[in-house]
Image 1 (cartoon, rainbow, N blue to C red):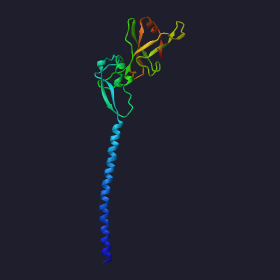
Image 2 (image 1 turned 180 degrees about the vertical axis):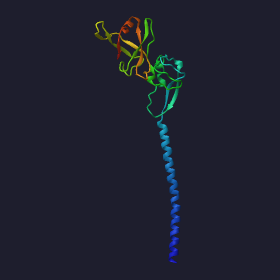
Image 3 (image 1 turned 30 degrees about the horizontal axis):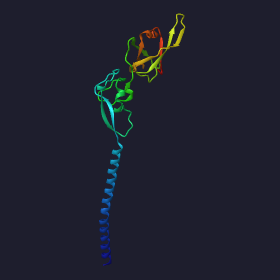
Image 4 (image 1 turned 60 degrees about the horizontal axis):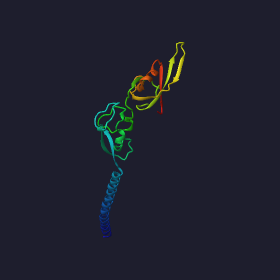
Amino acid sequence: MIQTSSQTLSQTTVKRTSAVRTPEVAVGALIIAACVIGAMTWSRSAVVGTSVLVVTSDVKRGEVLEESDFGTITLTSSDDIELVRASSLDDAIGLRATVDIPSGTPLTPAQLGSVSPIASGEGLVGLTVALGEAPADIEAGDSVRLLTLTRQTDGSAASAVESAIFEVWDVAPPDPLDGSRVVTLKVGVEDAVTLLGREEIRLMKVNP
């Protein structure tokens, strides 16, 4: 009789305990779900929409961008992405593409450069510079001076830093074999003689 009563009491206790824990588990699940939803809501609130500029058609390197070339998209990202904001449209108009830009591409500052148009009495001269003969970061819009080396008739060499300052019009991608690049300079017609008869020419980037 005693064993039977004990067993009955034990079973009753188990059932009551189980009945009590079931709602506790449900409440705990609700709390976790609420925390997850709250975290998602906070994360979404931390993401700020940013309106940036894109090109609306394919743009070739060297083309001057007009207002009709631009469009805008809104990015939702909490990351600090270096893109040209839509609010900078007026500053971007009239800049020149430094690389080929496919349609719909969000613009970065490195894809745009300020190169003034060719005026009367000016022209473009292309120089092939070997690896190390121009700064690695040279790009359209930079100002450069020339470091030249000229061989004399007696076999000696004369080096000089030319006084003229030239504007970089374009920089071609490096040759995959030797790393050389074609750098196009905008020069005055009268200053073009500076580039003649030079056996070696190095470009030095300077402030205009």
